[in-house]
Length: 317
View: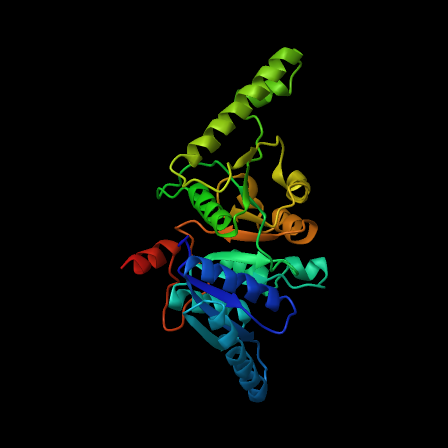
């Protein structure tokens, strides 16, 4: 499994940082990836405290090397945490950020502006927000598929979500669940809202579900064989009304989802979906960005923030 090449783990004062470190070390070892550990310090922070953070990072390096991760780097970043972390991602071309969800916070603070939420919304790389106590390997991984098709630039976000979820399932020897919430559209939707025979209603629903199942199976073509066959779930309805219950019912350890697609799960990232998963479900969430995603954070010494596509080109060169 070599999906990840350059992982960044966010370490700090929160007790959940130890869980982040365990997960990041295990994934870096399994995938043979380089691992960078950053300790964000938000000013005003005394110089003595910053130096102690550096020493704390250095003390954990020998144990990580003994765990079998050959390439380990540490750095204390001073400034607004999510901004400095995103700049680090752009500078060093990290393909995954692992960060802990802040525990013990009121819902309002979780939704409106902590480091994890800002990274989910603004970081150009994939971001894994780990729930407290989730340092053990994942047993059940859920990929939330939108089935919105290719974007104008040819990027199919579902392909990237599925690739990432399948890679993690390989790394953790986990069960992979594929979820797509659907509703009838167009004429079928109008007919379902009218007085029709039960048999006709059943035929419409069966036809729409079959179409979605075919689309999911088409995404599976060319996917490397998983430890077990992926299980497809096609609940009818809106995701914000069901996602939390479904994730808990599947004993999900992680939900992999996308952002800024045209409809469905991904559009709910900034509101209902993040609230449901990060606060209602017993699992973390991994957010995947489209290739054309552009972060609002401007790198140091640059005027224009790079897109995911630009970062991918630099990685390939």
